[in-house]
Length: 176
Image (cartoon, rainbow, N blue to C red; front, side, top):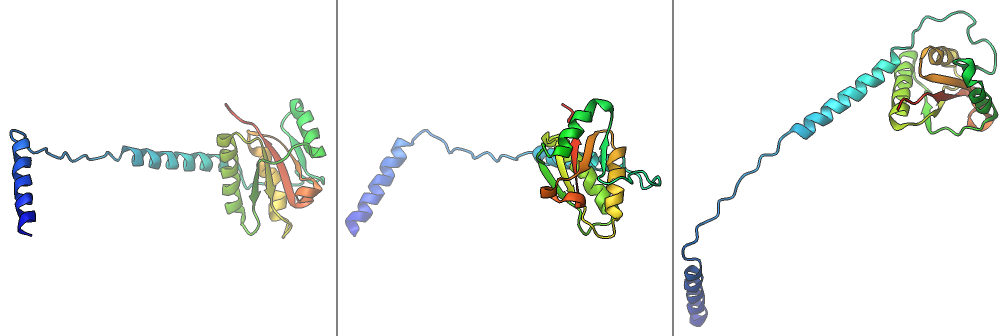
């Protein structure tokens, strides 16, 4: 044991000779900026604002007998009639689904605005909105809201495989 201690002392002396003339390195402390977190907060606030802006297009004032025909369909102008025909035939498959079951009109309006904002951000042009049967409040209100929004190209009652008259298929204009 005495030999081991002697070796440790000798190796310590050798080590100090080798390091003669060197100085101790100072560890710098790095403070990371919070800029990245601030940018994320700004982005999330901006996205929330954009979603809220889309829901402001929808008013609660309803004209009588505006969408009385069944099945419900709408096209913004005559240039998009071929899109409506394809939508009626079920040629489009929805990129995103929105379920509005159990929501009141105010919540549904917000969700509809969020859906349009997300579709434009993610470049999804076909959406599926399930409003259900219930008391037919949302069933009557949603086509009216969608017809007010400038980015809605066309919508039609969903095909049987997507919910028939308890859902609506929507084509949304994508801005590049």
